[in-house]
Image (tube, rainbow, N blue to C red; front, side, top):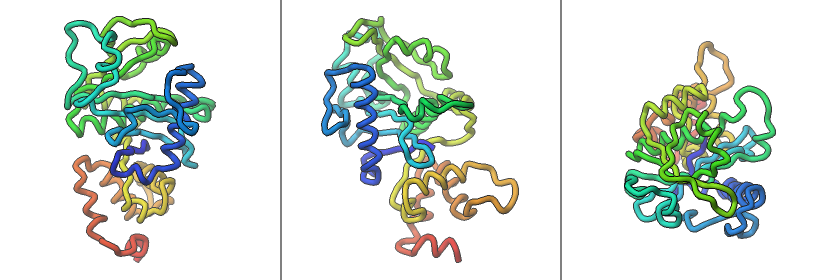
Length: 274
């Protein structure tokens, strides 16, 4: 599961968002050496961390941060087009528009990178899959961004088709290039297949989830359980909650939210257990 954090549910993720900013400081400033970035109270922030920013965050079972990505609409402004236009070749399609989102600040944590065994690295593709799901629902056709060319060989070997939109150029910390990903349902399915998922990866938690399950960790456990096929009775999950969570997970139009919203103030756990 990847948590989708927007202006609507950001208030539910105070500590988790601050952990994200701290990780961005560790990754971007301390590890990559980008000393021109702004660090406030131990976290890296910039002017794209505004109310329109969308954060995609992945956690382990104990809610320790493992992976993060930021998306931002480009209809008003775009880091690539506005601050680094020299990375865009003449004749390229516009990199700003209502159907274009910018993807930046991708990272994985040291704790996650230290893990060994099968599936190592899958979290990066999970966060991209969640980003694509959200973008396609919102009729977004492209992601744009920038790539440090030291990472480009790995990108070429991934299931995501990433196109450079101009010649790579030297910058203070290496060589960088502008990039673009053309989105489609086929690409999303290819990324899901690469990580062994046949359904949605991202989930937008709201107050109804917290009322039902108690906290973010419990919501995450329930969503993961809901994705596991039920072949026999007796597995450790509440079937009513699992069924509703699975419905909400696959309901891209948000109508499933009314199932719980219509219950009003009735205590959820009491309703489910009677």
